[in-house]
Amino acid sequence: MRPDLFSPAGSAGYRAATNPHNATVAQRPAMVAHPRTADEVAHAVRWAAQRNLTVAVQASGHGAGAPIESDRLLVDTSGLNAVHIDANARVARVGAGATWAAVNALAERHGLLGLAGTSPTVAVAGYTFGGGVGFLTRPHGMASSALLAVDYVDGDGRIRRAPEDAANAIDREALWAFRGGGGVGVATALTVELIAPQQLWAGYRLWSVDALGPVVDAWATAMDEIGAALSTSLSVLHPPAGSPAFPPALQGVPVVHLAFASPQGADAAGPLLRALRMAPPPAVDSSWAPADAARLAQIHLDPPNPVPALGVGRWLGPGAPDVAADALDVAAAVDSPVAVVELRNVGNDAPARDGAMTAVPGPFLLHAVGLATDDASRSRTEDGLSKVRTATTPADIGRSAASFADGRAAVADGLDQPGLQRLGRIRAALDPDQRLAPSRLVATIT
Ligand SMILES: Cc1cc2nc3c(=O)[nH]c(=O)nc-3n(C[C@H](O)[C@H](O)[C@H](O)COP(=O)(O)OP(=O)(O)OC[C@H]3O[C@@H](n4cnc5c(N)ncnc54)[C@H](O)[C@@H]3O)c2cc1C
Image 1: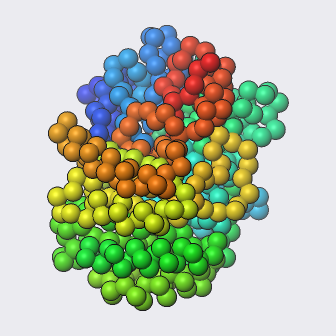
Image 2 (image 1 turned 60 degrees about the vertical axis):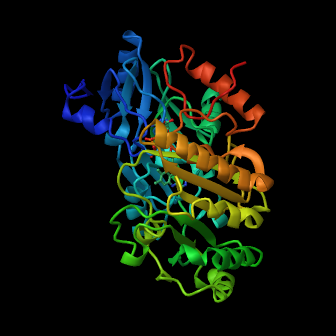
């Protein structure tokens, strides 16, 4: 094995790997492994078993939140970052540490795109295993449904492959679990289907928070009229200090942000742009225009640097536009502990493959997030998030969107009960000693 496969506390490799994008919970594993091959992942899992350590896995750390203490080996998959595009088959084979920016920079050379989320630095792996919704979801469905196969290592350190036609039933079950069920095992590579956008368009607008009411009205009106191509994200957010995307007048104050995109050309935004004529002119109009993958990954204005974030994600029903104003208003005060309240329209009729969560449970997604730098700020943020939950209760369908529960170790209602039970059975079969730390989705062990 490579001498630098493992790095101990105090080393540069250890420090880099334990500095996740979500910095809410300090990570202090016994050791960090930096595999570059599936063999090295398998070796790391067996190495952990010999020392009675459990194995946590991390690509980018956007989903960090579970404690990682000295009873764990942290497998840092960022070195598993090879990307190969098969343009004829419209498929990408992606290392488990690859980011969406890396995949789509290559895919678009062939006129193709993967079903990325809003942030370029999120890894394909955790995003897809959590379901994966982005600006291409409306016509093309969830990223989990585009997952064709997973190469992975099980809890006993065995290298396995999970395509739809796997000879072994448990590998077919594993693919079901990787498709939106948080996954089982340590993935080493993913095979994902790519789409060919007809004409990718994207844009965003920013207003001072005074415009919240009319902008929400315009967005809600448009929701009844837009077709199946336009995805939107409407939020009130507190800009990170010094962010160049925000002009001086919008620094240090809550801002209304509306981002929208379509892979089917300009006309998709017609109803929204018409409705917005009734709202005040925006302070920033980052034009609705043809876009490439980099531009698509920029319109949501996600923070590029690590943030100690605590969030909540919920699937909402068709009543979401009716509760939007009250929900977004929670972040509208300068001193609100909630730094972002966001609503996305994600409803779609795209066909979905079989998986734990391959179709959106509700037509709208709520995401709210604040800072959790210490106990006091965590408590203030929790209070603010519960106000958002109260405001959205009439539209809530009773399911968490676990990927958006930033900074949390566990989410109980990310799948329905039969789904959680099936996930529990698959985990038990592939990891009988519970060597591998589970994803945030709490499976039911029967
Ligand atoms: C700024 C930001 C923007 C986001 N935007 C979106 C969005 O638009 N749409 C959306 O759906 N989600 C979005 N998310 C949520 C994101 O999808 C989750 O945080 C996801 O878990 C990140 O995956 P990761 O691999 O990058 O993160 P990591 O923190 O590295 O991994 C998260 C979890 O994924 C699992 N995992 C990762 N790698 C492996 C592996 N090799 N084998 C097995 N399990 C693995 C593990 O359970 C791990 O704990 C966003 C998050 C942030 C912080």
